[in-house]
Length: 217
Ligand code: GDP
Image (cartoon, rainbow, N blue to C red; front, side, top):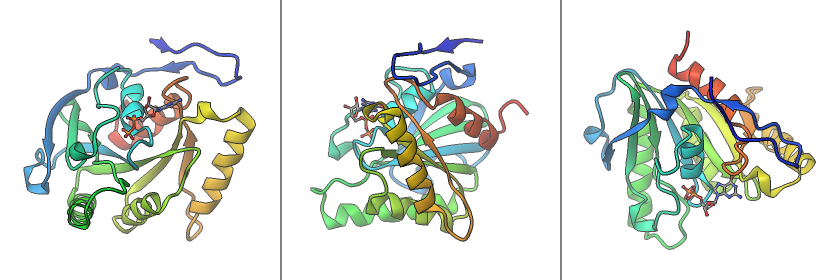
């Protein structure tokens, strides 16, 4: 078992075993249409997030890789759904970032259509991770993503990333506040603190991904 990260002075527990499956992730394709995506077989988990929330960094951290998903992309590159294979039957999916104020209405509409058709039609989609900057959670875009996820009856996980930017107590309080805010119909959505910098949260996230992807059992 490999351990990544070291404890730091801020009190977070940073020991996180990494399943080698995630480290083997490799890019297979990027698609702008559902019918151009890899065959809808096996299981996949998708990551969504407002642009600059830290989604690419989260994917890289989860896979213990430095440059698997591109960080700090330019807006022009945000329309593709990017697929990474873990093994023959499992994939991680990087959904196009959203929330750029500067994109045109036509581009926004195109993005919406792609998201809705992907989330509703993709049978192999086992769960949706919504990545939010802990300092600006639950934007209109995040709420929209969660609503589409709910409508598609997907398993959901909220990651409050860049948690290293807040003190531990403040981060925990924010997690509670967000968890309460997203509870609907008595259904609690799991919310985890995450940091690509300290690797906080990788262990619980792997637990959820393992379950969704049917890893190890
Ligand atoms: P994306 O657009 O959602 O894919 O966001 P990126 O992963 O490219 O991250 C946007 C910016 O936030 C980059 O400058 C990252 O270095 C920074 N960032 C991402 N995650 C973290 C984190 O956990 N902690 C800190 N301090 N910075 C982060």
